[in-house]
Image 1: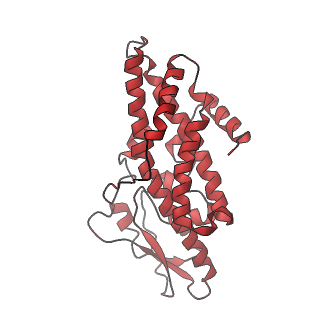
Image 2: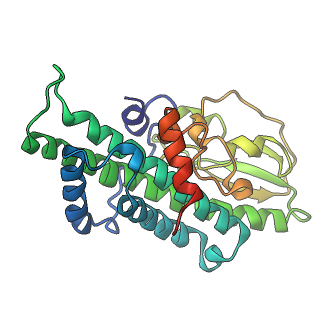
Image 3: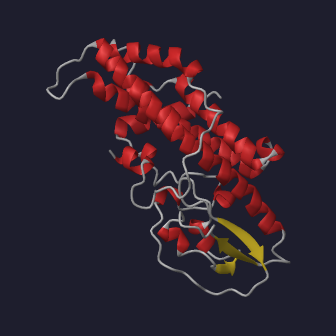
Length: 268
């Protein structure tokens, strides 16, 4: 499945740092809600396109916490901070649909026969663990790091008369992804379109950064294979995960309508 491949290190998506433990994500308060979701899906009282406000809100809360930690005190009033909030809400709605769709797919076995509730509930709990622990940990860290990068971008812009160029920085150890290593040491003007798609972070657990410099530009523009979900500049757009590239936003017509209807009537 595209989502599984994306999160487990598909082409351009691999991790370049050890798996973190993010204690902030406590799934105990989610348990009753997930159990109710399992029952409602099994009894046909809930469809993936119905979405689920509680699941959306729980997801958004975790990601907003990460963004606040990265961006700082002005997160709720700064224009870019507000854009990040809106993006994370859209992301949470899209993720909720994908999670419900995957849960729903386990209602029948390979022969098309309805499975027992106990079997179905077990599968639902496995999906819950995957989406709300494994994936959410990666998302939490990326949102925090991206929000830090967004705040830094505003500082770079403010100081560009003194430091007109940016240098792409890599950690330089043996865990740096090959594609990111190619970017290390690039120096280009802050106004250069290069930063529109290659401003770090450029992947899950990416440790790359940028720093202002008065060094001369070197004009380097290597060809790199960055996953489309990370092509962008969060400091300019307020978008952490490119919505044209992240698999959560791949939906059929009915799902897209449900997604848009929820956004149009959203009540945070």
